[in-house]
Structures are given as C-alpha cells and as structure tokens.
Length: 625
Image (cartoon, rainbow, N blue to C red; front, side, top):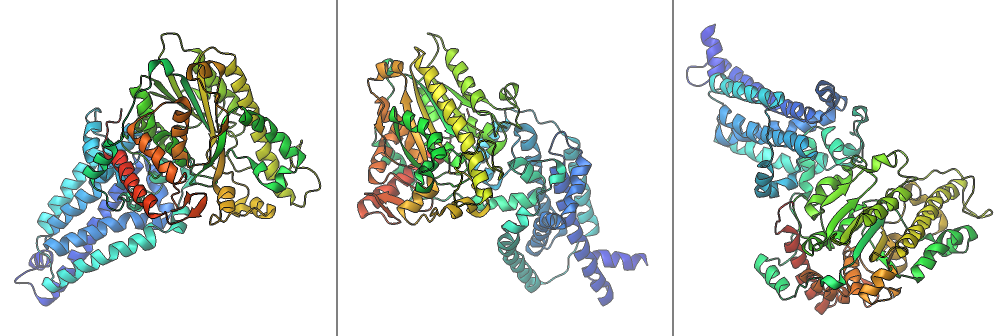
C-alpha cells in the first residue's frame, strides 16, 4: 500500500498505468489547489490592508460576490499552470505563482497602510521612485505578512517533497502553455474590463464610499482590481516620440522668472458643476434664471472672461483641475512627482496652498497634490471639518471656503512670500432633488415636467448662493491693500437628471460634432479679476474677453494678463494655442473657429511636437516633494 501511494505521489518509472493516471489526477488537483491557495492568501492580505475594519469580516465579505472570488483566484491558478507547462517542475511553477501572485499583494498592503493609496498596474512604471519612497518609511512586519511567509515556505516544501515529478510530454506542455497565454487576454477583455460586472460588485456592506478609489479597490480584493487597472498601465506614447528630440524641442523656448516687483498673490477657485445655464436660450428668457446670473454677468464685465472647453461632462472633476494646475491637455492620475505650474510658483518663491472642503481621499488628491508640488493641503479631515460638516458641504460650504481663503490672505505679512492659493469647491455637487423648492427659480407655466423643474430649481438655487459668495469675496479683496488676482472657473456642466433627462426635455443639443453642441456639452465659464492693489502693481485693467480655450491654457491666459513670461513650456503652449485653442481628448480641435478632427498640415506638425514635449515633461520624473 505504501509503495502504491509513493508511486501515485512520485509517478515516474515503476508506476503502473493506473498509478500513473492517479498520479496525473493527484498532481493536477494539488497544483490547482495551491494556485487557489495563493489567490485566497492574496485576498486575505487585501482584507488586512484597511485599518479600522475587522479583517475577518472583510475577508468573508468577498464571498458575498462569488464572481469577485473567482476573478481573484483565476490569475494565480493560470500562473501556476503556465509555470508548470514552462518548467515541468511543481516547485518552479509554485515559485512563479507565489512571487508574482503574493508580492504585489504585499506591496499593496503596505502602500495602503503607509499612503492610503492602492497599488495599481501603473505603479509598475515607478519602481525607481518607489524605492525612494519606501526608504523614508519603517516597514513593520504585520501578522498577515508573517503568516504569508510561513505559508509560502510550507507550500514550497510541500511541492518539493510531495510533487517531485510531473506528468506530460513536450506536446502537452507546449499546448498547455499556449492555452494559458491565449486565455489571459480573453479573460482580461471579457471579464476584468466588463463594466457591468465591476459596477455590480461594489460591497456597500463594508461601509465604504463608492467614490473612494481605495474603497472600490479593497472591496473587490486584490487581483481583480489590479488586473483591471492594467488598462492604464501602459501610457499612450505620442506618435514619433523621442526623449532627446522632445527635450531639445523644449530647450528652444526660453523660461523667465517673475520679477520681484511684479509678484502678486494669486487665488484660483474651481467651482463644482458651475455653469451659466442662461447660455441656453430657453432658460435665458426666464426671469428667475436671469436674476440668478445677473450678478455673475456684472462681475464678468469687470473681469477678463470667457468659456473653458472642458474634456468632461457632469463628472471627472480632476480633469479640469489638473489641466489648469499642470498645463497638460492629456494626463492620467499623477502617481509620482511631476512638472507643473504649481512647481513653477514654488521655484519663484511662492507659498502654494490647496483648499477643499471634502475628503482628502477623493480622487486621491492628498497624494496627487504632493506630486504636483503643493506645500500644504487642507481638507475636511485636517481643517474644514471645524467649519462645515461633510454631510452639508455639497449644499452649503462656499461661504466657509471663501472665508478660509480670506484668512489665508489676511495671515500674510510684509515679510511673507507671495501666495498661490488654489481651492476646489464642493457646493452644488449633484445629484439634485427633483421636488420643487419653496421659492422656485423656474417660472410658472413652463412646458417642462415637475421633476425637471425641481432639479433646475435646486441647482440654480445653489448657483445663486455661489455667485453671491463670489461677489462678496471680490468685494472683500477690493478692501484690502494686498495685491490679489482672482481666477475662478467651472469644472464641468452639471448633472441634470439620469440620461440627461432635463437637457433632453429642454431641447438642448448635446451632440459634440457641432460647435453649438460642443459648447452645450463641454463649456463652463471662467473669469480673471484683479483688485485695485494688483492693478497698480501689474498696470492692467483686467477687463474684456479672454477667448475660449481648453483648461490647460487657462494658466497661460493668467500669465499673459500679468505680463509674466513663465516657464519654457508655457512659451510653447502659447504657440500651440494660436493654432487651436482647444485640445480635446476626443481628438477634436478648433482651428480658425472651425470644429475639426484633422488639423492643417502646419498645425498638425506642431501639435505632434507639442504632444511629445508634453509627454516628456509629464513623465521625465521628479521627486515627490
């Protein structure tokens, strides 16, 4: 009996046909089981990543969605079989599976604990940067990591002792390896990138927030969200990109410092879902809507104003935010130190502050702000929570935000460095209630449903309050001797009903293949205003039309008004804007006022150079600051 068991376990010469068959079944079963074990261990590591959560509850919660478990187990199972077909040794297959299957999970565990930021496939591009980051932290061996090391060693011994010889000839191994490699892209496209599956697997029982990248990640384990993140792992390299050529192209443009006598304080505010709905004729004629926007139009008459042509609609806030702060027309989430206009202000001796009455984890802003170069960031957790509760911030927080900015300015002394103060508002964040307000904004007798009128009432009531705060803020700045230039803009058009129901009922064209539809869908207002003290320093009147352009060009418009030359990239950016003021991520341009997907040969040649320089500037690598 012992000999038969040994022959089943070891296989090879001396085994009967039945023993050889049993050996194949035994080997396949345990090889698959070990792959499943690695996947379950990675799930356990993920469950232990969040502080303040019961690790057992988090782990068991994964089984609420069986497909989540399957999608976390498939990668290590495929890896261990691929390793076996390649090496025909169980221990070698196990090492491949364990190292590739567990090491990233451990990295994710520590990254979440140290940075509150999950490990994404895009981070694989930042190995050198990661070494520098890790060097500044003390990594304690947590219990789950200790258990992982013990289990890793035990399974390695098991494969060496109890799985020494594996069945299968050369044809089987080649065919098996090819099958594994063929399955990977099919599963990736069919399951891991399936939006329906992803949207249906958010585990709200964990008490997470569906807007949190971290909560979205951890509630789905490790391997499922990590594999899904691979779609952003490889950057979209511009056609014809060459590092040396991009660097030499930018070197042809001159950079300039801001002269000390022309330095003024800059306050910039991006307003949540802020849009001028009086641009739509059917609303402009209503008395209630006109009353909402009349104070804004009066302020615009005392400012340089125009429209931003954003990349986003009803969401994706940070696209407009980071476009302004970095100058990039195309960008992913920043995951390392990056060239930005914030860093330029730093280099010019400015203090750079960021203010937002929302959570720091929202869009991973806490980390991204550091990568952009901000000296200091204040969120709900470390400041705004003392002034406004997060529950009411989407409805009433602009007053607290502008008061905070005024305190920033009033704290400056004659010896203080000039200030670049950027703020992102939270007030007017959708969705909006569909019931009519006690004091309706939409006039009676309009031919629209009560639900549409209710949504518009609530949105416009919030906008009216925001505009009132803008007027109060500029009035307060005018009273001060400290020179301030104020930039304000909207991030995107508002959500107005599911499936754009309100826009559709109003008859607003949202087809971006026409100029009218493009503006209806993507435009938001901006204005640049200066108090008298700043006008005295800069010598301009800061009134008139600034033109319409993409958010990436807004900072250069500010610099032009201040007569600042700025960094070399901004000089090239001015030339790009002269060709087309819109660089839309849908491949749309505005050349000579004509909406087009194809630039003229001269403009297209420059645009290709520009994109290469932009890409080099974004990816050349900086310290995190």
